[in-house]
Image 1 (cartoon, rainbow, N blue to C red):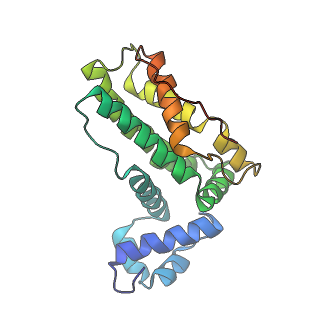
Image 2 (spheres, one colour):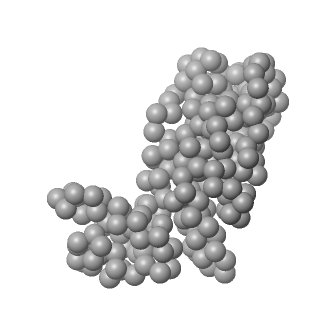
Length: 210
């Protein structure tokens, strides 16, 4: 991050690096302010607490992997393509070694800390589910999906198909790359999901993550 970048951007970049290297609990306000080259007063001007910094860092990561996914879609084909793009971006994101490491640290630190667990869950998993649900709701409204289930439940089901056991294997250190072909895996999962909702399953291979 350039030294002349806005203080908030410097804080988030520094916090990302520190959190991803050391975990949340090991980073103090003094260390963050020093790494971002700002005063503690400036830190608190932008973020009332370190938990607020964590939420902002995680939400910025979600913004990054959702970039390029259409917010609104007008046809069934565009809807399907948007779902595939969403999944591909998500799996590309989860393939990153620093993301795997950060998740390992957060899951460890969240044990016994309900507040931290809630902040991390809602900023990461909850935000992703909500954004995907908004996309799925368009398919429900237009009749591309025929389901009595709420969009939030359908979003959780599709996220489960995408992640499968791949990310669990990565968290356990059993693989360094949970999704060898994110695009093909996303495509296959979306096909299975749509078929289960009464839509046609497209032809193609069904790759398995290693």
